[in-house]
Length: 168
Image (cartoon, rainbow, N blue to C red):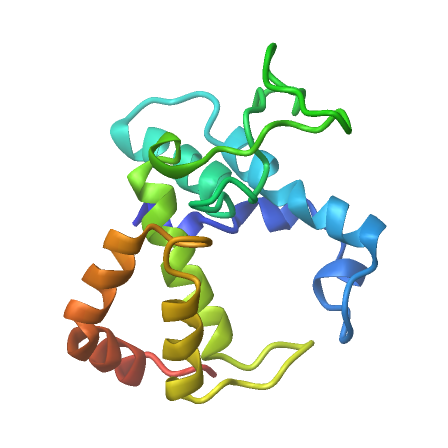
């Protein structure tokens, strides 16, 4: 359930960026990255385990296994870098490996699988073989290798879900 809310922070992003048909420029990309913090912020008053998981998923689903993702070590209340976690350019040090919640690592893979296999305003749908090739290529860099292995171990179930809920 929390995974379905991974991009909820996009409600705070302008449609001119969200629905742009081409690639985003650097400034637009920086604005888009804020959806992780904005989404987590929606769950800052946590009343349940669900609220906690939804905040974690929203915040961490763009962190990458090799430490090249975002938003990194930030305070979700103000978006500022947590003390001791600033890198040379002033941005937050990204989370890496086991620092990333398992929920964020799972949703990262599911999100990319869905995005690549779906048509978007800025790209056409990739065929399944190309999607699988990309997921395998990103194992150990973008994705936790164990999660990639688990993904492929249950691919028949994943395929049946995708067939049951096709893009509209």
